[in-house]
Image (cartoon, rainbow, N blue to C red; front, top):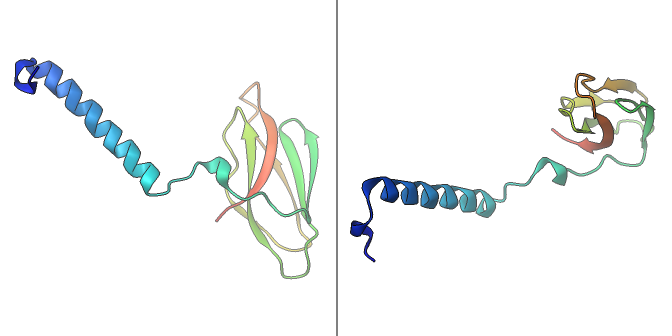
Length: 110
């Protein structure tokens, strides 16, 4: 069956499918990685989970080894990227409006 034998609506639908597929393949070819591919924070960043939605991070890395970090939560938005200098601590709370929120991991960002 030739493409010209299909209705205009069918041809438009097929065109939309082809364009969407090409855009998706372009994203893969460009090397777009999901957020979960971010490297985990080093072990010298101590993680103390206070509650299922809250963690205290302490940078016990050598002097001058600060990191941009992000806290990843399951079933809720992740934290913003923030700087944690050597010797500093920071409490990060997730959005408790999400009933199934749970601390997942800490990653390097920035």
